[in-house]
Structures are given as C-alpha cells and as structure tokens.
Image (cartoon, rainbow, N blue to C red; front, side):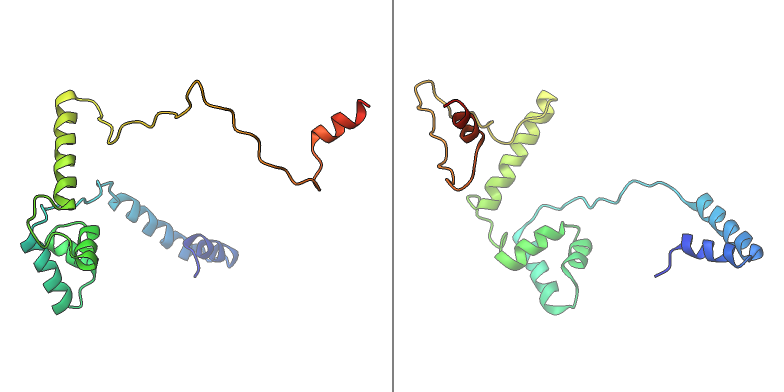
Length: 157
C-alpha cells in the first residue's frame, strides 16, 4: 500500500505541479477541520444478573461481536467476555468473587477520595531477608567453563 508521502514524491518526480497544488489544498482543508477531542469512554453500568442475561441473549440471537454488545449495552467488552466465557454475574450472590471485588474497589475509592491520596491495592512486599539467615551458596558452575578465579588462582603458584 502506498503512503501519502510516497504518492506526493511520485507526483514531484513526474513534475505534476498542478496535482501537488490540489493535494496541498486538500491537506490544508483537512488540517483546518481536524480537532482534538477527548477519547470516548464508556462509563460502565453496574453488572446485574439481568444485564448478564441480556448479554447472553444478544450473543445467541444476533451476529453481534462482543465489542458491539458492549457498546450497545454500555459496558466494558471484558465484562461481556466474562459473562459469556465464565458465566459471571448470573446470580446476585453477595459472597461471589465478583461482588467481593466490587465492594473492595468501592471501599478503596471511598478511602482514596476521603484521604485525597492514592491508596495501594495490596500491602507492599517486604524483603524476606532476616538477620540470622544463612547466605546461599553459589550455584555450581560448569567445570568446562573458565572463570576469573581460574586465572587468578593459576598465576599465584
């Protein structure tokens, strides 16, 4: 596939100045119409068993892709995939993995807004080195391979 730049270079080589002028005017018109808009973000709806059933219904009765279903229902495509592949959100069990994760995220968001500072998701991992631990012995090395110690120990004797 030819790029616009390659096309422009080919017009220059052929001496087609009139076509280059038209191309330049089209580029200027395009630049004038170009705007910078924020990316469209779909605000996710709360996943409910009814919404999960609607996702399954659309998947079975139409030829819509997961992305199209997500866009139509206003949910994330990943949520559509979870419903279709793993049957998530089909029950309103407050002890389900999804409900617990949602509640944790809501609590974290509430704390973050209250403290006006980021709250880590998990506790930081602390180095497990203790004072009384023994230093690990180095890996056994391949005796066919020379190391710097071989040279140093060979020259001292």
